[in-house]
Image 1 (cartoon, rainbow, N blue to C red):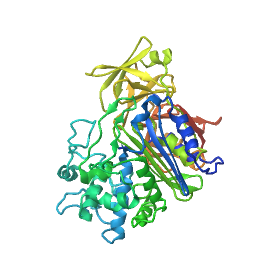
Image 2: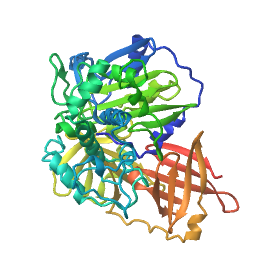
Image 3: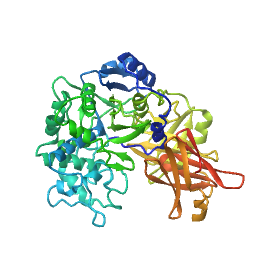
Image 4: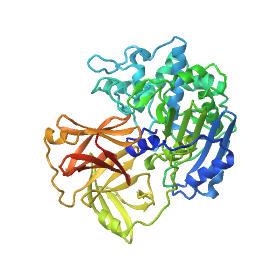
Amino acid sequence: MNTPLACLAAAVAATFAVLPGAAHAMTDARLAEVVRERLLGDRTGACMAVAVVEKDRVARVYECANARDAGRIGPDVAFEIGSVSKTMTAALLAQLIEQGKGSLDDTLAAWLPEGTKVPDYQGQPILLRHVVTHTSGLPALPSRLGAKSMDNPYANLDEAALLASLGDAKLVAAPGAKFEYSNFASMLLSYAVARRAGTDFESLARRELFVPLGMDHAYINQRPAGVRAATGHTPNAQATSAWDFTTNLAGVGGVRATLDDMVRYAQGGLGMIDVPIAASLEATHAAVSGQPPMGMNWMRVPVKDRTVLMHEGGTGGFSAFVSLDPQRQRGVVILSDTAWHSIGSLGSLGMHLVDDSLPLGKPRRAVAADAALLQALAGEYQLQGAMKMTLRERDGRLFIQAEGQGEYEMGHDDAGDFYPLALDAVLRPQRKSDGSYAFTWTQMGAVIPAVRIDRAAAQAPVLSPAQLSAYAGDYPLAPGFSLAVREHGGALQAQATGQGAFPLAAASTDTFEAPAFGIEIRFHRDGAGKVQSLELHQGGQVLRGTRQ
């Protein structure tokens, strides 16, 4: 299931919506043009079902990167929507609260079987409001996941193992103190909501959401007649396994739906359908926490002068994007039979459809890598907290071999990323300020920095708290988006608007890195030697800000 990307470049995309751009009524033909511009020829080979929902019309399109694959999708095809399912779980929770059966200030323990061991922090319990804003402090995954293969990671997790995993968990900070995306916590919420409602999760979702909203082909494990289940694909165009969930845990990411199902869901969220759960759907939009801004499992994203509700989802072979713009009465739905999260998600197309002043992006096309880059990358690397990895250049191609494993040939695309032709991963080179290269390795949702170990590394400077404080300040990078740099506990930290703080490590004089996010920050001084501005380098983009 997709998680919010800890990527400043992605966050800036939303705040760049400052150019003039009125909402224009969308037609099927215009929508097809936009989707083709983003998708045709993309090296993923993905197919997409896309809709723009407006008050008096709905534009729909089904497109594939390669025309020969058009039969893969259509109105009768159900996609895995991944973590967008969490917004549905939130609506069912809001309905129970509306019925007087609970409160966001209830403890999680109160919604679980008596005697369940639930961790706290120095007596401070996890509340439901912490669960729906990913501030519970619980880890991303349960300790007793029992996965036999990450191709279908949740298939063997049952309710007993989920609850037992709570006994293994320990909180390192007070609930509510820090945003950390947790599928573990969301599975507990799915289970708890079904238990409080007195039925199984699929029956509850069908009775309260799917049937009233007219989502006739939506399901979890009981596929309706006449519905085709799409086959998922990795971003290197390989078919992959579906993801399976125990029914009562499926509110974390197990809903499957057609495009028309999700159109009806968006219409319900925008108040266009008069159904009993309409008030509960609306209740999930209200602000619950501020860092980052969230409702109940909805991200509250500032776009120009309004707030747009968004959530992305992803499984091993699928991606989804849903947004609701209550002020403009406009929704966007994107369903793809390909996992996009390792290469930037569906955000580019989704944000452009939210507001056309935002850049659309372009297809990633396979291209040959520059020979000089291949030669510069070749060498031995250490993945942080993991194995060593060797990169080799041979016959104008890059090959990669993890310690103790086989060698894989890498493709290369015009976005500058390398990718194994035989598995789902991304190698993103990073040119450092001294001209050398490092890279990040993205696989199964993890972004792991790698540093070169076959050459002597320059000694990183050791700076005192006073020296670090010289960099402290607020650096506006875009209208409404700033990077706050602070000295804290003898280290330097940065925090972007609406995001959590992250550490910066000194790489050389006036250059700091956050390797896990692929970030390099270069500070610049004025003639008097005082820090005046910075450049933030990430993913080939450069953002500049003057110190305030």
